[in-house]
Image (cartoon, rainbow, N blue to C red; front, side, top):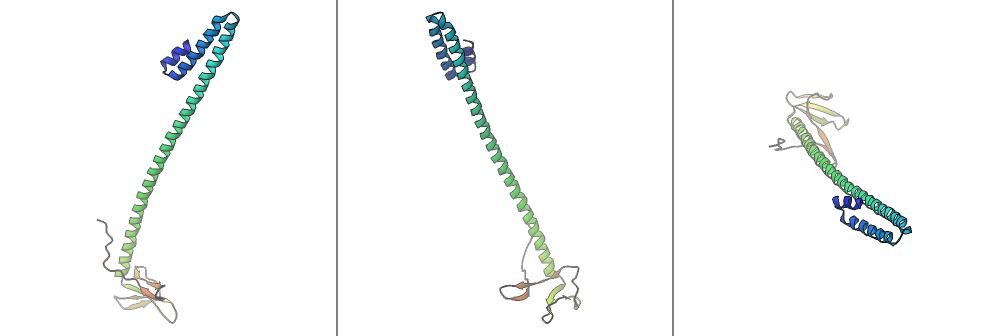
Length: 168
């Protein structure tokens, strides 16, 4: 009877009904005679404990499944947040690198030095437009480089026109 009161208090109605049916069956056996009292007590003890243990293990299983569901949902949320953060960082770095590359290209286009290739020796030299000096040593300041064009199969300058590398 105490088990029934506890089950009623914690509101487990289906388990309460099951235990009540076992108790009623044991009470019916107990009313039949002396020898049946021991049998009724054993039935009560064994079946009620078995049912309660079954319910307990099932409730633990349900809790484990629910906690696993919550953990998966939390994991997915964390992974989505990490992906968003990675995307923001990557886009910031790409913008920064493209700005730096753009500024470098602009400095090269405005530079006094230009790179040329001598056809006979296939060596590069640098020519300073401001003072008309030719040098075989690479200058320390930016210069306008020559690039080999695969499509035209020759060396040529890169031309950049009307390019703005600022962000508004």
